[in-house]
Image (tube, rainbow, N blue to C red; front, top):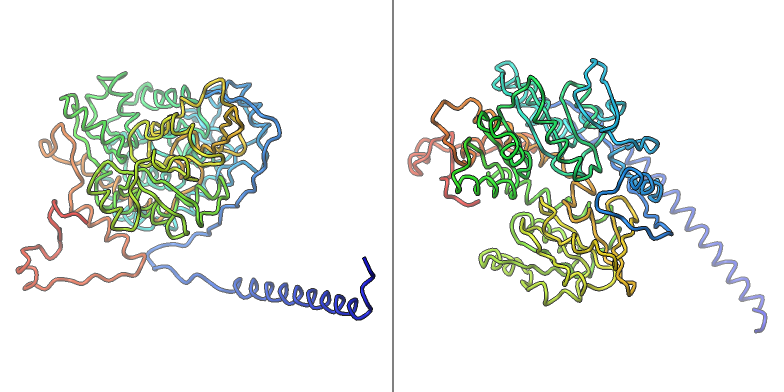
Length: 545
């Protein structure tokens, strides 16, 4: 090849100079932009609410392990230690700071808080200060729940209530628990999911006097041990239940029937748990009144829809770094959770299919622009499958066998029954942990399917959820507990009830202040024309929002 001419060399040199000048300008502009943005303030919140500093979770980079490793479903202590070494430091969740050098099971440790109490079992009580900061941050965006706490604190409407709870243990749930305590209740708490507990938050609650039995990464045996220790303690008789999924209710009903009979009320917030309650009621075995919070308007239309619309992407991005533009995604179920997931994925340019059993939900999906299919029709071509039905075996081993290499499978329903994960734990398949809550299941021909959170709830297992929308749910739960605990005898029988419409509207009104929203008031003439009370409720019970 001939040498370039002097003129050509001059042009190359000039081009190189221009590139460097462009880079300098870009760096200067970037610095100016950062400086400008750093001077911007978010604006003052309403004077009724106090401001607390916030932070953003740090996004971690994926680092694959080099050696393949077999994983049993419930690893032994030794197995857990080897697993922790195989996962890179960058794989640990930024929102749950586990101590990497402390691999002892919390069940094998004796810990004491500063008050001298050891009636708890968490990962590390020394993380309490960090957890307290997390709770304070959550309080900033849960101003309506804090407002309820301040309004009712002097009256102590839950004085004498002994609440045993089984929910996700996060900073947002901690605000609810401490609200219940401020309203007069005594609380003992455990986790409804083995992966969703924020260890530092559990430590902060335990330090503050709440008996918490939970840590991130429990085994199945640990899970039931924690529930049992939460219920069965000397000198403490629970009289209220706050459940998410029905596991605690089921355990108490089966193992401690005499304790269960003395319960004054159950508040349940999940599809799965509500289904279990209705089964007990239908069989004539429900001996206490229960409140179905899941189907309250403020839970279903906000938590299920808006929360999942944002958190589905957060969970998938944190775990896989996948780009959704042009990807083919199947969302199994078009209830409120499915609607939220589909809306988010469509907005990012994904090609979204929906599977449904209900013709009404199926028609809604069609009218929203989604193609309704049977899973088997598209199983070989899709890139992502998301289940949100509340059912079992929605994705079977046969369908997993037919998925293409690199496909992602995850669940947005409460229970881990939707994906047939058990069928994947066979000798011919290899499990490789590549990131916290991310497993590559490898077939003999080398095909890999990416399974998230072992088929458990994706958003709370692999990321976080929007605090504000959890404030709506938490306020609903608090009011349901107050209503059941203070209801006069005979108002609620041994059955499952929906939250009164008036309470739903009250929860919504508390949260409108955040947006500085101003509702229009009916005139006397208008109220009379509609046959309504000017102060509500504004819709009949049969109205569907």
